[in-house]
Structures are given as structure tokens and as C-alpha cells.
Length: 360
Length: 128
Image (cartoon, rainbow over all chains, first blue to last red; front, side, top):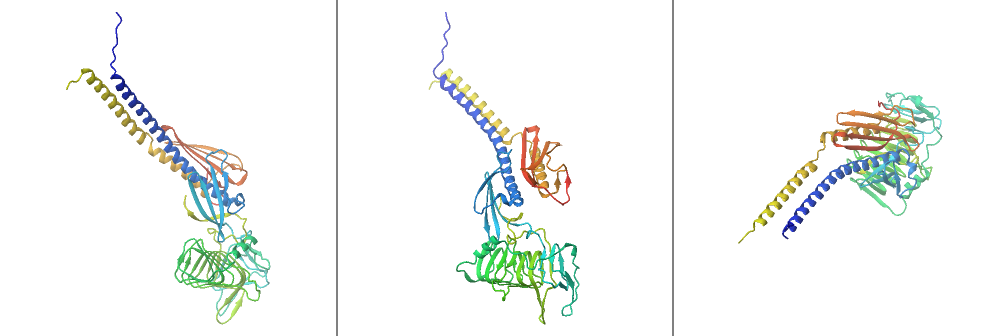
């Protein structure tokens, strides 16, 4: 007699519940396993995205020609053998600097860029060859590559003050042209564009961050501390002990006065005057510092420190008892490899990061 | 109220299956969420990779090989190995593509970075 297996109907839901539980457990375990691997992979990927941004920055610093046009996004595969190395890079003008934006995967950052060297020939001190030597008085120091007049330098006395600084190493000197290096035509046009149209007559400022200020006359209040690029049609006065933080700048078509103890970290540019009978003028107070580029295509009285590069058309010194030409009185002009320069004398040179605006 | 013996057995079996599944899930959950990764090994590998890339970027380290020739070197550590490969970048003589890969055999994982490095000129450096 064949055996009869009796399975009650209630066993089916119990078996289904048990199977479902087992299935859910299996799926849960697989998800956790996947999560563990994907979180590790994601960490690796994010770190590589950040590295892609740094690598793109290095590429642009060395070869700015990869990005020929402003305000145009370029997509690049950085490394042929690394699939996740796609970046999107774009540049725009930011005063006389550039703003570089880079994104890779889920990461993005932007940087303020300048030039690694002030000009094609990277002089620390350039004053044109108009015959007379540059006279060093007091504690003056000039160090770095320089372009000098045919008669070089001499060490003299003015108003009873002898030379007591460091003698110039003329091995680093070249013969200068009859005028200082002219600005890059495109950059000159960009700077001029800031002055077009109706602008504020007078601006008195004491604070700011990554700002561009345009006015006829700009005055930075004494003791103020800010980060700004100032564009003025007539004059700029930086009050005593005020600090324009790196990267800042001053572009002015007429007169720039730096009062005692102030600092401009970035650039001071005074282009050649339209009227040659009324030359532009730069005057630097005692113990004031320009860290970066000083470009004065007119008269300049240097009494403080230029750390970076100084391109000066005519050196002057006013002692109160007399006005002298080709004099550096207690002036220190020294090279500085840690600063970056504005895009003024050349726009095709190697770039250097001045500041990270939006961190990775 | 009357319970059939059959129903009680089914309930007990279902409870047993459920509890086993629960124990298994929690066991695996802790195993995978905390993971059997060796945190020391991962941290050490990550730090080594980052330091090597930084040293090359800052010019502190430099490849001592003929210009334009690819370079590969493997170093052993107590947690695993690091392989460094360097090659000229897309024909630019001043740039180098650097790939640093750290393998951690105990947990079957690999950390890697590919970076672009500017070839240092004059600074003091450590030769690889």
C-alpha cells in the first residue's frame, strides 16, 4: 500500500515566510558588502578628483596655452590611462589677475592666478638707459637681475647723507633700453576698460575682500586692512599703516601716494601719461612696502622697500631742500620668488597661484 | 481555546529560522560595517601615498633616471607595497605623470593616485 504524505496547507505560508527572511538576509548582506567596497572606492575617487584639480592647476601654471580663450570652458582628459581624470577648466579676468575654475567629478575649486615672473626677461629692477648712472644714497640696496643705464650705478652723498647700504653686484646687470618695458597691449586695453563710462568720483575705503574698486580718486584709510584691486583715473592714497593684503593691487593713471608704514601686496601700476609734459608720479613713504610689481612709467620716489620687481622710468628724490634725479635714497629693491605678478608686461608667461578662492 | 500540536511545532520552527536569520544578519552587519579592514594599514598606506605625491610636487623628491625614460620602483612596507611609476607627460619636457599605488594584501585593497608633477630644477631633493 503506497504511503500517503499529508502536508497541511498551513505549512506553505510558514515556509514562504522563512524563505523571504532568508532572501532578505542574503540581500542585506550583499548590500553591506557592496557598501563597504563602494565607500572605499568613493574615498579613493574623491581623493583622485582632488588630485586631478591640483594636477590641472600644475598643467595650467606651466602651460597656460592649453586655455587660449577667456570665459570658455574646456574639457580635458588629464591622463590617457586614467578614466576618471576628466576635468573642466575655465579662466576669466579678475582685475589684472586671472580667476581659474577647475572641476573634476564631484569636486571643484577656483584660484587667483598671476605670472611667475614679472616680464619676459624677469628683471627685479629696470630703469632706462638715459646716460646718467643710478645714484645710491643712504642704506639703499638693489639685489637681483637688473637692467641699468650705460653708466651703471654710483655711490654718492646727498644733503650730507653717505651711502651705507650694500654695493650692487653688477654681474646681474644688463644694459637697459631707452624706455621701460611697455605693457602687453591686450592687458593695457583691459585695464583701460575699467575706466570707461561714468565712475564714482571719490571712494574712501577701509574694508573689502576680493573686490575691485573703480573711481576717480581712491583713498584707503590709515590702518585699514583689506584685499582689493583699486583702479583710479586720478589718484590713489594709501593711508599710513594700511595693508592691502595679497593679492591686491593699485592701477592709477596719475598719482599714487603710499604713506609711511603702509603695505601693498600685489602691484602698483602707473602707466605712461597721455600728456608727456605732465608725467605720472609715485611716492613711497618711509618703511612702506610694495610686495610684487611696481611699474611707474613716470617719476617715482622710492623711500621704502620693493620686494619683487620695480620698473621705473625716472627715479627722483625730494629732500625738502632740493629735488634730484636718478637717486635711490634709503630704498631697498630686492627679488622675491614667493610672489606672483599681475598680467601686465606679458600675458603668455608661466602662471603662479596667488590664492585659493574656493577650496576643493 | 484549543491549539493543535502541529501549529505549535510550526511556530517553533519559524521562530528558530527567524532567530537564526536575525543572528546571521547582525553578525554579518557588524562584520561588514566595522569591516575586517586593518585601519592602521589603510591609514599608513594613505599617508605614504599622500607624502610621496607631496614630496614630488614640492620638489623635495626627484626621479634619478634619464630624462624621458619611464621609471618604476616598488617598495615594501610592513602593511604592503607601494609601486611608483613616472613617465614624461604627453611630450611636455617639464612635466611628469606620477602614479603611486599602495597594495594592502591582508585586506585585498589598493589605494592609488595619479598626479602631474612639475620637474624641479634647482632645489635640494631626495633622489629615488
